[in-house]
Length: 412
Length: 77
Image (cartoon, rainbow over all chains, first blue to last red; front, side, top):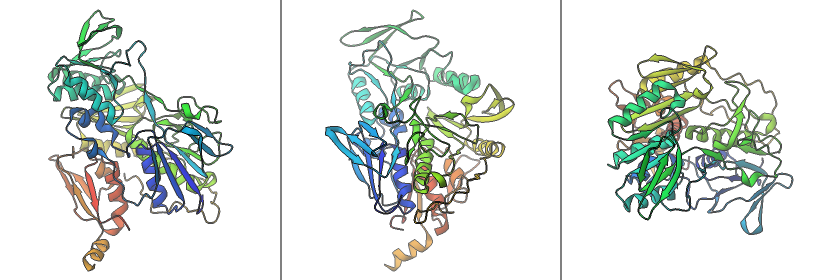
C-alpha cells in the first residue's frame, strides 16, 4: 500500500476497528472506508449478554474508544453484498461498487439458527447485538414467567447468570452433559454448582422436541419429557461465519475464510482477514487452519492483519498469538489461555487451574476465579509454546511502511 | 500551553473505572510496568505513563475485558 491508496474494511466490529486504528498508527495516510451492517459505531459486544441485557449499561456506554485519529469514512448500516477480487471491488446495496487497493475482511459471525424454532416471534431471540439485548429486555418486561436459554456455551451461561442477577427465573437447556463442558469436567462441575447455588435451573443432555406457542408464553417440550414454560427464549447455540457475501469471490469458504499464516486470504491479492471469520494456521501450535471466536483474538488479529496488509505479502509476519479469553458468571471470573479445544486430556495444575494436554504437551489453561494464577500460568504456557522464529527475509518495496520495532510485544 | 506540553512530555494519564474493573489482570499481562494485580485482589496502577510506555498503556486499555481503562493526553501525538 502507498499514499493515495484506499483500504476498505468490511466489518465494523472490534476487529475492523482495531485494523483501522493500526493502519493509522503505522502512518497509512490514504483513504480508509469502514463498512458495517449495524447502524452504530463499533461497540463492546461482550456486554450484550451481560450488562446490556441486564440493563446496567446503556448502548451509549459501550462504544469502543480509540487513541488515534481514525479518519475513516464510515459506511454504517451498509451490508456488503459481493466481492470481486479480480476487479478489486466491493459491491454494496443499490449497485454501488467500491474499489480498493487493500481489503480487510472482518465480518465476524452470525448466530446459528435452531431448526424448528419460531424465529419470527419477537420473544425468540439471539444475543449478538445491542438491538438483540433490547428486544430480550422488552420480552422480559411483558411477562414475569421464566426465561429459557438454549445452549450451554459461554453466551448461554452468561445469559443464565444475567437472568438470576436480575432476579428472574431461568432454565438453561443444553445437549452436552454439563454447561461449558468443552472446558473440561472440572470447569463444567464448578459451573454446574455455581448455577445451582444461584438457583438457575439446568436441563442438560436434552433438546427441544417441540414448541408450544401461546399468546402469553412458550411451552418447550424437551426430549427428556420435561415441559418448560418461558416468557422469552434466547438461542445461544453457536455461530457461523458471515461469508455469504464472499461466495463466488475465489476465496476458500470452508468454515470461515481460509488464510495463510499471515492472515492473507488464500486465493486473492491484497486481501487480509481478521476476527472470528479468519481461519488461519497458528504456527505456535501447528499448521492446521482454525478459527478462534474470542474477543481478544479479534483485537489482536485486526492489528496483525493491518500490519501485514501494509507490509505486503512478501514482508508479512505469521500471526502467532497465544489466544486468551474470559467470561464472568455471577461473581466468578473464568479465564482461558491457549487452545483448550486441542486437548485430549485435562489435568489439575493448581487450585482452580485446569491444564489442557495434547499428547503430553500443555496446550491450554483455564482458571476458575484465579486471575493472578492465570497470569503465571499464561506465562508458563507461553514459555512452553513459544512463537516460532519468523525466518522471513523478504524486504517490502521502498515506500511501504515497515512494521516498526516499537510494535508492542506480548509481554511474558 | 506550557501545561499541555509538559503533559505530553510526561506521557498520558491513566485512570481505571473501579465500577467497571473486575480485576481480570489482562492489563498486567499487557503492561506489567504500569498495572499490577495485588495479592489482596486489588489493582494497583501508575497514574501517569512515561512517553516510552504509551504503547503498553494503550495495549492495556485496548485489551481490557471491561473497557475500564482510559488514557488522557494521548490523541494527537
